[in-house]
Length: 308
Image 1 (tube, helix red, strand yellow):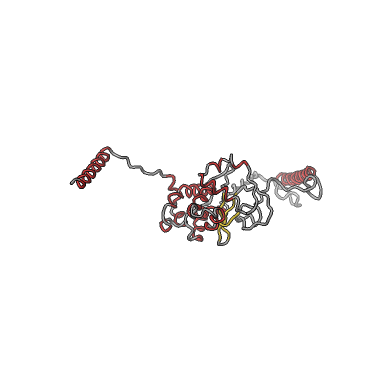
Image 2: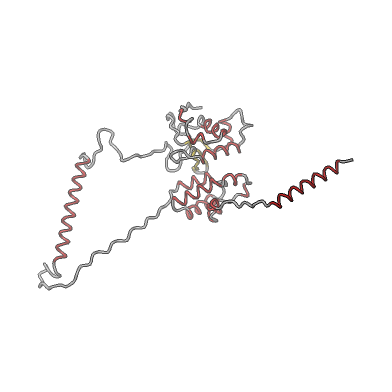
């Protein structure tokens, strides 16, 4: 088992504190068995044998799946889930986000799509040179290079504008050796170009997160095609993600064959089901009275049967 540094900040974490007690125990124990990058294979039998080797009877696979799903659905203050589930080739893996452990060995498991096999890299700002300030244009300082580019651009723009004014002020045929002919027309300004339409496309990695959250892992290819057709903007993705999380408890209570395929769920617009409040049938007074009469009659029959 690798050595781990458990920081005291985990006790004050709002995300970890919001987990149920058994999910907190699972999350803290999982930190001891993942690799230096916070990754592990999503195999319920392997996870329970690695985390709880002497308590297998108390941690069945269903309990492991419930705690793992709870940690995946819990977001930290920066909006990332405590645990991320993803698929590489035909296997599914997990990664504890913001793991922040000292890397002492190579990763044992592949990283999420788009991050390679190493730890995820985040770029902040522009690249810098290791020694001294960044250099631009063959060793010139940024300020000097930017002033040179600005000056060159201003001169070229001024020359182009003056040449355009000269062409507009001369009548037709001027400068060509032909006789000057007065021209009576006004130049119309150029029509403004229509604004370019920007199509917002949701990143492809969103489907991996959707697939890890969904409750039935059948028909992946059709599900991805339906996902690409239905989820076009970040607003669509937010609605789909909230709906999947909101319906998880209901779907896990069903048998697998009674859960809809992901493609069916998307094409039928089931992500809008969460917006319709449940219909509650009001209980009428006569219904309560009838229920009481039925209870009394049943009690009387039972007493008569017991009487000698």
